[in-house]
Every structure is written in structure tokens, then in C-alpha cells.
Image 1 (cartoon, helix red, strand yellow):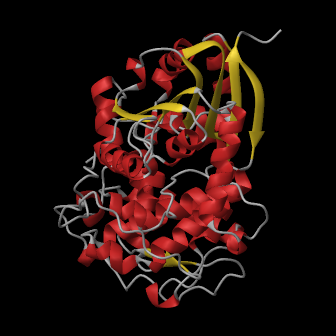
Image 2 (cartoon, rainbow, N blue to C red; image 1 turned 30 degrees about the vertical axis):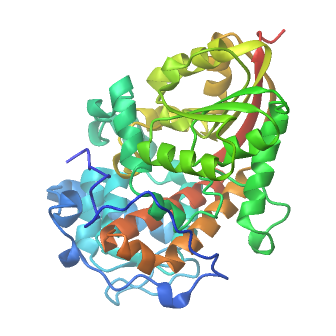
Length: 445
């Protein structure tokens, strides 16, 4: 199984578009901890690759056991495994089923590592802490000779996940059309699903909504959006940036491939009395019409796929009126890591963002230049994304009962918590960053 249907996996009932945003929790609720869970509780019909153990073979399992044991001991991560080991000084990774854990890693690498967590075969008293240590030593976990043989043991990305015009719509819907209520359970009332910008850390003394508005205002300022600006937004989300731009007097065309997002964004625009200034279109970026004074795209390029980055930047360029400005927000990773990730089917590409790939700063600059665009500004703030993800994870954990009531089962909830923690760890370890770029016409001198 390589292509889980995320729009149905883990749900026993559909959820409507009307969104009730849960109140902001004061902090992590200890009573909201995930209940005890094991592979026996997994619904094999919904989660076949989690319910069954892969056939790894004794040799691959033994190699995985040796490499994992060596890495975890060196990084001081292992906790007691069936009472056999002493607790580690750092964050603890506790193995409930060591044989299954090593078999999955031996057969499927990091996908197996994530699926083992989904199956309840391991846990941690500090999931982000464990994943941050692992992310910080990602290049050391597998010996160099085995890394050079990556093609022999790492799965390639499914051809069905390519972001063709049809595939892109399917891939976007598999994540963003899960349920508006699911996203409302962990996002703030602005329903903004991208990094906020805070005034100080830790971020508990500022509302997430105000930090999201600060981020949006920075992007609007970067693109010089004001009264009468013709603004194109690629990637609507649930409409907060379009609403804020329209309140400045801009006329906004905003594009999305998510039917759920489009419906709720239109409702929010109408409720705000801005329907005469905002048009929400179900449209692919490759089908943009007209020229615009400003273009803004927030964390959408990660869903485009490397194969289509030339098309994406060409579309940006063609959408820009003379003298216009493009504000682009993107998660980034190192260039070498990006090349390895592009060639590999990962846990995130299988379960969370099918068809997606995080670009490197070099890739962004190269593709922008090739499309006739000049990078005028490039600012990073990865630590802010780590805090954003921490707050999302706290809200998701606190509202576990609401997520269950929406029909999302325990395996989905473990998968989603792993995704949020995995992402937070990426930023805390500086394996990932997030950048705001200003692009204009022309190439650098």
C-alpha cells in the first residue's frame, strides 16, 4: 500500500463545512493524553500498512536493530524496553514491541518508524524532544556506505502522486478536505495554517491569532498591498489573508484547489461584508488569468512538487503587472537534503502531504531567476514556526475528544500528533527553516 486515501482513512463519519472553533486552551491538558493503544486496536481496513507487520527478512531486521541500537545509545535516547534497559538522561523513547519496531524500520526506514508509532509499538515522554535529537543528527544515523546505497532500500515516490492538473487537485483534497472542523480543532480562530510571527519566546503570552495577523501584515506590506491594489493570492487557506487585504482596500482574487476551504472562505468573506472585494476561485495556479499589482503565495509551493516548480514560477511571472511585487512564504531545507527527499517516498509524502516537497533556498532562487524574477529580500524565522507548531500540537492534544467526535480514530490521531511533532522537531533542530521572499521582475545584476 503506497497511497492511503486520507480523505477517508481514520474517519467513521463525514464532517460538514460549518466550523466551531474550540476555545484556546490555557496549556497542555494532562487528562487529554492519548489512551493506551496497541496494534491490536488498528482497523486493518482503514490502515492496512499499520495493522500488518511487513516482511523484512532476518538480515534487514538485524541490520536495523544494530543501527537503531547504536544510534539511540549514542544519542542517549533509549528508555526501558520491556524492563531491559535503564532510563536515558534525555528524552525517552520507550519500545513496547522491539521486534515489530525493528522489522518496520528494516523494511521501510523512516516510513516504518512513523507507522510503528501509529501502531503503538513505541512511545515517548517527550516526542518532540526525541524527534529533535534525531533530526539534528539525521546525517549521522545511517553510515555513509549505506547512504550511498539509498536507492536499494528507500522507496521511490508513487507515480500516481505527481502534481499533474488532475493529480494536484486530488493531492490537495486528500489533506485540506479532511474536515474544516478538524483544522479548527487545533488552529486559532483566524484558521491560518502557516507560521506565525511572535514578539517573544515562549509564545504563551501572546494570542496565536495576533501573531498570525502580524505575519499576514508583513506579507501584505512586503507586497505593498493597499487601497486599490489588484492582489492575486495563490493558496487561499480559509481566507484570512484575503480578508485582511480587502480590509486595506485591495481587490483580491484568491485561488485554491480545496472545495472545503473555498466554501468556508466564501462564507467568511460574505459574513465580513467584503464579497465585492474578494473572489474565491477553485482554480489551479497554471490557469491564472489577468495581471495583478501584487501576488502573494504562503506555503503553497511545498505542494507544487519539484517537477512543476518551473511552471509555478512562470505562472507567478506571467501574473505580475509591470512594476508589481511577489511576496512568497516557503518552508525550506538544505539543498542536499532536498535532493535526497525528492527521490524518496517519506512518511510525510505517504500520510500527510502527497506529492509535496519542501524546496531549498537555492532551488527557490534558481527557479525564480529562470522565470525572469529577481529576489529582492529573503528573511528567515524558523524558530517562530517551531513555536507555532507547539501551540497547534497543544491545541490538538487538548481537543482530542472533539477530534474523536468528528470520526477520526486513534490511529489518525497518533499519525497527526506525530506529523506535528515531527515538523516542530525539524524547525527546532534547524533542519528546516521558513522564509519570506520578495520577488520582482528582472534578473540580478
